[in-house]
Image (cartoon, rainbow, N blue to C red; front, top):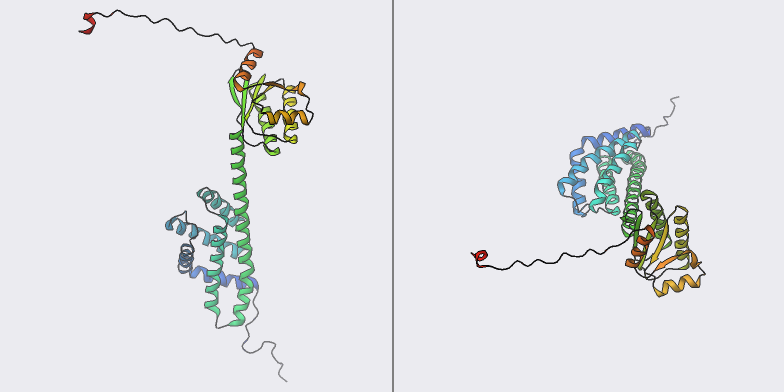
Length: 306
């Protein structure tokens, strides 16, 4: 009696995921030019990467395509992650948004998936096996690239925020051992902490003895920030520097009184000019007015006019 075969007529022999993926990658490589051009065309039509020229998009597409296939073939994402980070560093400063990067990666996934459907649409069992092999890997790649771009974008944003904070609270050296810190805008707890760090670093770096902190441009502060300013003054005192607070508004003065700040620990002067003059007095500087020399009139003569 002849044993019945377990393989049904018309069915596709079971192939390993590795063998199937090799076929997928081989198909993508054989049709590289056509698929890459289709991908670029769809990027341009979708108005993604609009800050880049078509030639730039095409150049990047070449490299992304090859990295994409390598990730599919090897199953590892290290090389793709490194390239994605490098790409992010180059295009984020040009204003490329997160949705654009995610969009182009999913466009590539869909262009490649469509080409697989066209190749295997006459063999549905094989097509299903191919889809089950390709789609999870493609989604993993898309997710990796998207997460990497978002992380790089967040890093850039944090750097920009720190730069803005540094610009908004500059510690300036006026003369030897004297610093001024003009503060403008809203002081929230985060900025107050950053302000303290800058003041203490400035005192240490310049061996300052007096710091004039001018808050004329600050409309109001809450109790938490007021207490933080007092702590900054105390920390500066421990480093051997005195802080002179200038430009207090009536509202800020009222806040300091209301929350019970020990005003004996705070030296205040009305305005910035007065604060600098007081700081110079404490440092032993003396301002001596310079007298202008008298004008010497030269008598006019006819010989000079000739």
